[in-house]
Length: 472
Image (cartoon, rainbow, N blue to C red; front, side, top):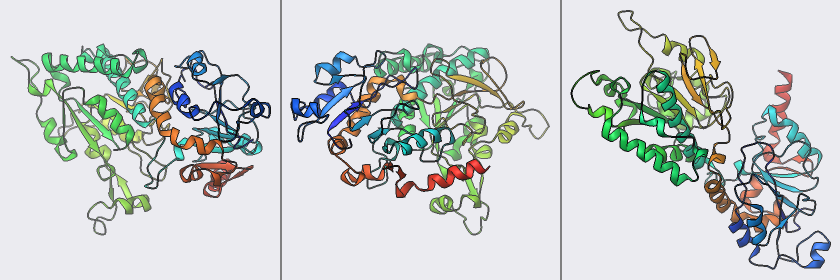
């Protein structure tokens, strides 16, 4: 069935909140525009007419675009995708639903040998599915081409601001952040941005409580996720500082009482940190300055310093960076506990400034060890007590709050789908007629994890990872 020119669009059944699609109705219309949708003879044999494309969309009443919108542009509606040689989804389909000998595209989360998704990989191999993973579609420059990263950053930052307002209220402070809702509660990204701008105007005019200033956001990473998060942050009155400036920034504290507003109350500070700000070489004589290539090749020769040089000055950490287990953690549980129990030279307790972590990467047990679980869109927060090492569903007690929603782009489903579909669109016509990975565009060839019941050569290492984890 591979390469027959018939494209299927899956109903997203894995998550309640998943309202995205791989293509908008308008993008489907463009794909169909070059043909009349295939001849009757072609349909009878489960294929499109030569050079033409058919699109069959599984009906869904929760998809952000109505079924009728797809039907109006020439798509067919059917739960049965057995005629389709190429089937497009967003997230992983439920186990047991894959059709054999088809090409599928979706985020599989299998290329790192993720244990929770190995049963899905087993099914893919058993059914001889050609799996093209969006996460692995990269250009010749190595950069990802098809991704929702910016929308994860935008939605995550909006949710973080909501959480900050609620956490501060539980700590006894009213702030303009209370007027910001979760991203999914707005009809559009523009409406969400307008709410953030309004909160920023309130801060510029009336300021933040003196006890909260200076308020400092720390962003990790410089990729699309970080760019999306910072796009929302920049709607607030802000000033970016370098990591080296953080100690001096906190040396000035607005008076608790007084006439007029201190300038620090009317602005929110931000600092963007990279790998060079998070680790240092164990052998400083051999590596007096940070060498990124050496660090990536030999991370075991470096020690973490983020907890010493950055975290003590942060109010909120917005984690947007890629991380693997071979690298030092951004923050371990022990490091967070040390921050929460720190004392000054006189032996007096030093209050921890850190109020929250927006882990947009949602890497459970990853770079921030205390991220113990992901959260749901309707319940996006949990509280972690670093002294006791416990997690709680409320925001009322001691500790820091976490935002850890793992499908953040689905909070902005229309804009995210449009953005994603535009990036995917250039590959689809070729992929629809590709009978083998070699027939697909080069970027898609590199993104093909499985074919004909076997792992493709680039991904044969997954078997070794899986075997090692089973042996543990």
